[in-house]
Length: 70
Image (cartoon, rainbow, N blue to C red):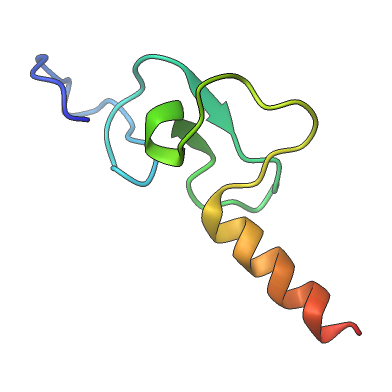
């Protein structure tokens, strides 16, 4: 989802879409997440998740690590 709003070039960008903060956002619970904040729509959320939430990249990384430890 792209917005046609004037954007301060110094404003940080977030999410998989690399856009500025707008609307509802969720933080990845991985403290080492490279992106950190995500727009609900970009990650398929309609409401705030209960408990810990990991972005698609961190969830995949976590699952790969879990598979190796078996």
